[in-house]
Length: 239
Image 1 (tube, rainbow, N blue to C red):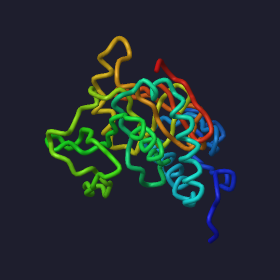
Image 2: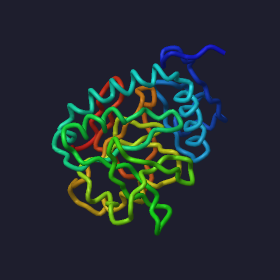
Image 3: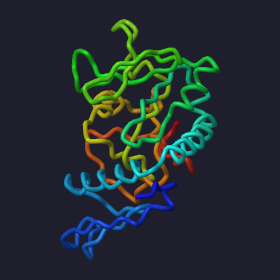
């Protein structure tokens, strides 16, 4: 099988469900890639999650590198990036768009950069470890690299100014479909208690083809202030 160069080479994906006339499934058909209709049940969310993960993984290294560079150009122009002193991103895996060009530029201009690590006390939460180009890594239980630091060096999400997080799908209202583990939602739960948006500003990063028309919202979801892709910027809240 030849490698796929980019989203434009990918076929339209179709999911066929029982025609119940509800949840935007009239006609029994949901069409992907660029405008996805409402996905409301856990099984449908899981199927959408798998379809978009497969599309990310189909991208070759050159396409991923180009997308990461285009993403970085858009992120560094955001006011939230320019204001931030402490910012965190993530170590891309499973076809996620790579934020490391952003981290490298942030570190070069004197920002303090962090990557998520699984909590050593509560394994369903995230802390954030300092990163530099000289950082050494170890794999966590999911096979994702984490900086090798002492517990004293870790910070909580509340101590960050900007958090760039990965997603599987997003919509124009800032709803995010993640991998299903809930790590970011639990780690950012304090934001739901605030009447006004305080730090960190939370921006999602994605390939543009991960955009959906609408996603369902659960009570525990943390809304994004916006989403940056390789092709555009989607504002969803104050940043």
